[in-house]
Structures are given as structure tokens and as C-alpha cells.
Length: 313
Image (cartoon, rainbow, N blue to C red):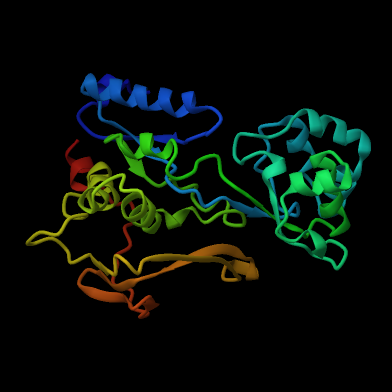
């Protein structure tokens, strides 16, 4: 493996810089390390989770509490196997003792957003903590009793561990952090993290004034292109490909999440659209006009391609 000192001539990415509101030392240690790398001439950039999109899920598919062994084991298997595990009072003792906190806020803060039966409809838009208090139950029992009754089809919403503005400002203020994190499509049934460019302009610039619009454009476009080694992309200049976005600053809005069945085999995923985008041009051709796709595919697919920077290294 190459040493960092041998790679100092080209940028590198480090995944991931994430805020945990209850443990700020985690992201602060990461930022401190990035700063120390650049102070030594080592060009490492962190990928920042700069969205508070949160997670929508059902226990049919949920597996992001696997930092806790009891929850990891209980959420594996078929629907019938998971039903039996999550209904088992003996197993719940371990689940209560291993409350997950890494990916989402605590279980009492979960909201029932999609009851799946007439009996659980009464809990719609209620937090698990409030339901537990009303029923005189532990929050884990309250949540799992609802989920088991609905055969794991109840939809819950879990807030993320980072919120605007809060500690998020410490991440976006660091010049060595790229905005946005991709998990390669691994969790498309749970979250819509791709909303971060619109969210950056709405929350980071318009609502909270954390940065100028020019800084946001640099961090969302030019900096990622530079780190990826694309010398002719990410900026507007003579001779560069005409990749241009024209938007209504005051009219930008992140729309509610949707479920679409557009994956192979009819499988579904969550998406989240935005509005306020007048034009999106790729290589000089309009691909989106007034928030609507034009069915123009003017991008180019790179197979085994390398940028100029990578080729020269």
C-alpha cells in the first residue's frame, strides 16, 4: 500500500466526515486530521455527510442498526424469521440493552409515518417515546409491538444524527471537505442522500448564511471536479464543455420523498425531486427544462477512462 507521503502530489478522498450531535468529538477529530494532512502537504479531502434527510424504513428491510450485535442478528432473515425474532420477549431484553445511536437518533425519537393497519392508524405521526408513555411500555416494546402487528410493514421515520445548522457548520466551514456522500446505491430503500446540492443552497446559503453562493458553487462543482482529476469540468470558462445549471434561487425547494418501482425486476427505491431548476445543460444540450426531463442524454459514458491528472501521475 502506498504511503500518504508518496501520494501528496494528487488529491485523495477519505470517507466519511459525519456529525453525531451527541458525540461532536468524532467529526472534530476527523477535521483535525484533515487539517494536519494539508499542513504537511498531503492533499486528502473528506466526504462530508451534508444532509439531514433522515431515514424512512420498515422492518421488512431495515438493517442499519447493525452496529449493535443484538439488532444485527434480529434483523436478518426472512420476514417470518424476523417477525418471530422481534416478537420474542426474551430477545427484546438484549435489544433494550443495546439501543442503537450510530446512524439515527434514538428510538424514542422515531416517528410512525406509515401505519399499515386500522389498529395502528391511531399512532400516525406520533413519536415512539410518546406512544410508549401513553401505553406504559418501554420504547422498544412500543415500536416492535406496532411493527409486529403490521407484519413489519409499518413505516418509521428516523432523523439522522446531524442537523442544520448545529455542528453541520463545522463541517461546511472546513475547506478540505467535499459536500455529499454516496453509498453507491446500497440503501435506496431507506434514504435520499442525493438531495444535498439543493439542500446546501437552501439551508447552507439561503436560510442560515453559512457560506456565500459563490462558495457553495465552488464546493458543489469545481472542487469535486478538481479532486476527481477532471481539468475541463466543474467551472464555466471558455473552451470547457457547456455543463450549466440555471435555477431560481428563491424558488428552490426539496420535494417530499417518493417511492418508484424502476429497478430491475420491478424493485423499488426512494427518490426525492427538487423544483426551481429552469435549465440543466450537459455538453451544451438541455436535459432538464423547468424541472422536467427532456429525455436528452448528452452525457458520455467513460469505460476504463482516466482523467488527465491520473494519466499524468
